Every structure is written in structure tokens, then in C-alpha cells.
Length: 319
Ligand code: UDP
Image 1 (cartoon, rainbow, N blue to C red):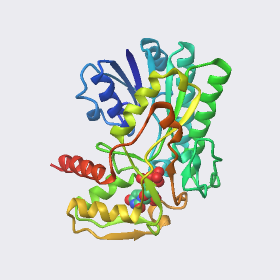
Image 2 (cartoon, rainbow, N blue to C red):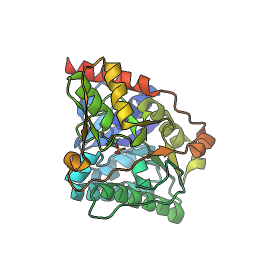
Image 3 (cartoon, rainbow, N blue to C red):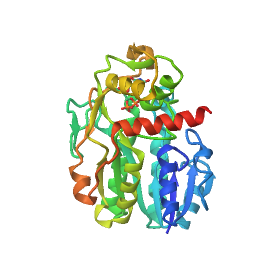
Image 4 (cartoon, helix red, strand yellow):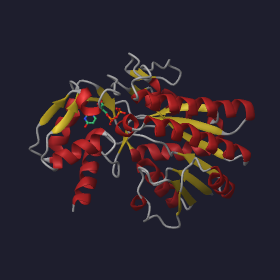
């Protein structure tokens, strides 16, 4: 098998590439290194990395022709990045996916697209099911352009499936975390761990009572590989995540304890953290019934274990 991973130099992409290479697959990566890093994948044997954008249709076409399957992970992600550069976010996420869909359809290559739990928006529910309504904030809150761009990707992929029977599956990833994730673009766990290890205050945004469910990247990657192998999942959308919820304040306390840190917690108003384009959602956890029934998915790694792994990773980088 030969696989193309767009965004393969990123956090989740690099873990996927490792898993594919370990199965003996030939892995090609297409990554513009905007948020990905070559160091994430340079240790993977036999991997070929092409540094370019998914918006470059000729390059995408040449690569798709060479492989059997395509994992499309390349996207502009991270609340900080989205709020700072909504133009690039919208263009990159919509145009890049359009190109990947067109070329994989041309050569009939199975495509897995990673979407996001942001799709559900700020609905008042706490647990989200694939068919739930989506509740988006206003367009002057730039955060929502990310969810809107990924929703267009989903619409487009499902349209390719319906109109052209193009074999595609979509996954909505809920807060996925683990080693190599950077805190630079807003992600909370690497940010808190970095702050705790440097003895700086942990910046809890808002009142800290908002909750999230965090999933270990090592529990997500095998599910992506399995969904690629199964044809009965084509044309469908699946949540992947964990349903153990934690408040952000509690998360901060756990990070401090597990890092053996003396840091304190500092509550930061949202406007101060992200400016005016930001709006948070209170709760977000996945219903996992559908993915469980389809492939027997079950997250295994608990939050404390995840925090320990991230602490070890950040410590190793500080050396
Ligand atoms: N957050 C925080 N401090 C930080 C970064 C994030 O309190 O330094 C909060 C953020 O407001 C949100 C949660 O942590 O409520 C998760 O944020 P993240 O950006 O990791 O993911 P999101 O679920 O918002 O996409």
C-alpha cells in the first residue's frame, strides 16, 4: 500500500505517518510546513516529504496518481491562528480540500478527510451526535470561519460521494492531544504544560468552568487507519474522541500537580486572550455510539496518562 498524508508533518499527521510506516506502507507527505515541522517526520524510514500546499493542484494530482489512498489532514487549525488570519483559514481549508477531492475522484482513490468538533458550534448540548444541528455564532466572530470552512469541506465531500460515488469518509476529531502538539496556536494542554514547567502562571480563559474531552492521539490514529480499510463507512461522518469531560480549571490543577509545579492559576478574560473575534463554547464531548458500532472504537488512554506523556515530551524538548 502507498499512502499520501496531507498535513503529514503536523501533530496528528506525523503520528499517522509513523503508524502507516510501521505497517510497512510507503508514505508520502504533502505539507507546506505552515504549522507542521519537518523534525516531526524526519525519523520515519522511507517517507517522502513534498513541501507544498494542497492548493497546488498539479502537485496534488501527481502525488494522488502515485498512491492507493489519501488521508487529508492539511488545514489551518488552532484558535489563535484562525482568529489572526481568517482570510488564509477560509481559503486554505476550502480550496485545498476542493483540490484533493477533485484529484482523488479523478483517480478513484479512497479519501479520508479530517473534520472537527468545531462543526457543532456553540450548541447548548454537552454531547454531540453526528446528525445534530449546528449552531454557529455571527460572522463577525472570526472563530466561526474555521467551523464554516470545515462544514463546506464536509458538504463537498458528501456531494462527491452522492453524485460521483467517490469513496470518501469524514471524521470529526474532538480535542486530540499528545506529544508534538504545539501550544503556539492556542491549544490548551501543551500551553498549560509549558507554563507549569517554566513556573509561569497557567492562563485559564473565562471562568474555567467550560469543559472539554481530550483524546490521546495514539487512540485516534488506529481508528483513522481502520476507517480507511473499510468500504462500508464510505459516504459517512464519524465522531472520534473521548467522553471523559473535564473543566479547564480542573485541567490546570491536574497539570500543576502532575508536573510537580509551583505555578498558580491566572484567570484571563476572553477579550484579553484572543481579542474581539473570539467566542468560546461551554461544553463539548462526542457521542461515540456510531464509531463504536462501525469499528469497535474505544479510547484507552486516561487524562492523567495523557498529561504525563505531554509533560515528558515538553521536558525532552526543553533540554
Ligand atoms: N484555554 C485556556 N487557556 C489557554 C488556552 C485555551 O483556558 O491558554 C481554553 C479555551 O478557552 C477553551 C479550552 O481551553 O475553553 C480548549 O481550548 P483549545 O484552544 O485547546 O481547543 P478548543 O476546544 O477551543 O478548540
